[in-house]
Amino acid sequence: MTAMLVPVFAALGDETRWSILAALGEGDASASALADRLPVSRQAIAKHLGVLQQVGLVESVRVGRELRFRAVGAELSVTARKLDAIGAEWDRRLSAIKAIAESLPRLEVE
Image (cartoon, rainbow, N blue to C red; front, side, top):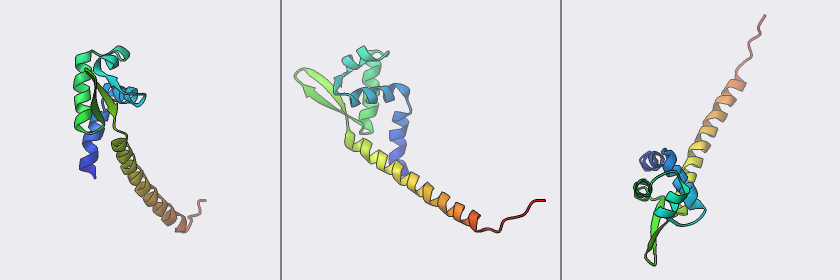
């Protein structure tokens, strides 16, 4: 599972890519349209979109002569479920530690 998450989080660890993904969450957009909305050049946007595409978070769709990009909700959902599973395991472990700690005899302090 870790091998699958690392590339996704590496891609999302960049603030510009995070901003691009958030913008695509509002609707499909071309690299030019994203460059108009974000303080990044169109060429830089294209490179960031390539990274997001490689990890499956973004896909391209041709609309007439324009190439638009969209966020891939299914991959984002898979990532969210994996994070939920990790969180649930931590919750389970912390509950076990709490149960052990609460079962220990209390020491009286003078």
